[in-house]
Every structure is written in C-alpha cells, then in structure tokens.
Length: 236
Image 1 (tube, rainbow, N blue to C red):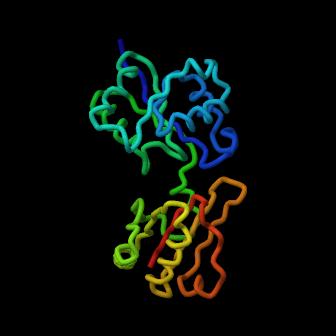
Image 2: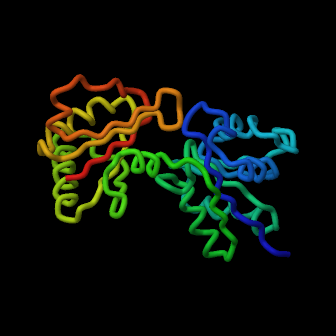
Image 3: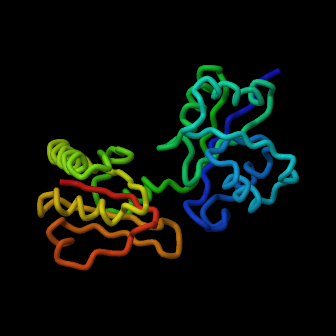
C-alpha cells in the first residue's frame, strides 16, 4: 500500500470566510480530507465547518500538534499517512509549518518518504513584506523578540546593525497585547533614518500597513495596534 500525501493547508488570518482568501482548488482539497493535524482542534473545527465538506464534522479525525506535544508523540501523527490516507496540516492562522510547530511533522514526513504538498494561501509574513516597500530580495524572520526591556532593546539594535550591513529587511512578531510596547521600543532603539513597518489585521476589514522612517514615526500619533495581529519590519 502506498502512503498518503501530507497537504499543507493555509487558513484565513482571522474571522474571514475561507473562500475570500483561499483559492477554490485549496478549499476543494481541504473539503475532501477526513484526517487533519492542527495546532488547535477547536479552531480547526471552525475552519472545517466553513468548508463544503463531504463528511460530517463528527467523522473527521483531528489530532493536535502544538508546543505541548512531546517530540516522541509526533511520529504517531504519521500513522494515517503510512496507512494510505491523505492528511491535512493546518495552523492557527496563515501557512502551516512557518513559525508553526507543524514543521516537525513535515520533517518526519520527508524522512518517511511521504509526499508533502504545500497549497496556496495567505502568509502574514509575505503579505507584510509585499506591502511594506522594504527590501524583498534579502529578508529574515526572527519570530518573537525578548520580552524584557533591556534584552529587547539590545536585540533590536543587533537586527538594525545586521540590516545596515547586509541590506536585509528584518521581520518579527509580538504577542498582540504587547504590540504598542514593541512599536515604542523600536522607536526608542532605532536610528532616525531606519525604516519601520507595521502590518496589522492583514486580509481583514481593519487592515493597516504603514512604513515610515523612525524619526517620522516619532512626529505622529501612533496607531492603535494592541490586541490586533501585527507583523513588524525594519530596514536600516
């Protein structure tokens, strides 16, 4: 028996209908599957409920893979694939396996010779980069920066220096309730000419993308970005 295929299925970045941000073939493929691995089963069910699934939701198997999953348990998630069933991997938002624990499953699938099929959909990181006007030829994503003020300032200055030397755009994210603090930290740590971008509520009705030099940000009222998913970018 041949193994199934692991489909990497992007999901909306917020409470938007799937068909507004996902191509129809992606929606159709997701609707055909009866096995899923998700960062959170509850939000995965909400996503699947919005699809024209051929199977009742109670007949769809959803296994969780998140930061609490022991490494030794990840291999068990391959069992349906090795039995010949296709499996969909979904994240909480956007693309699975990018800044997402699903990467561990993808790595094991490759080791087991299982076909991996990434599907088209929204990526907050690429959308932010596209809309920022910053360098798209050389960029790096750094996940979360340190939470402590002194460590965060040091890291921001390191990223600014690296950006200046390499001509690279630096991307990172923050826990949404600390977004305002992150923006204030960027303005305090960066040089006046460093360009700083924010991309908030991407693909949602409240979407806002702004890139200004640090000195220009300081001369205006800061936008309300707290508790709203935001990608931060800088280029020196």
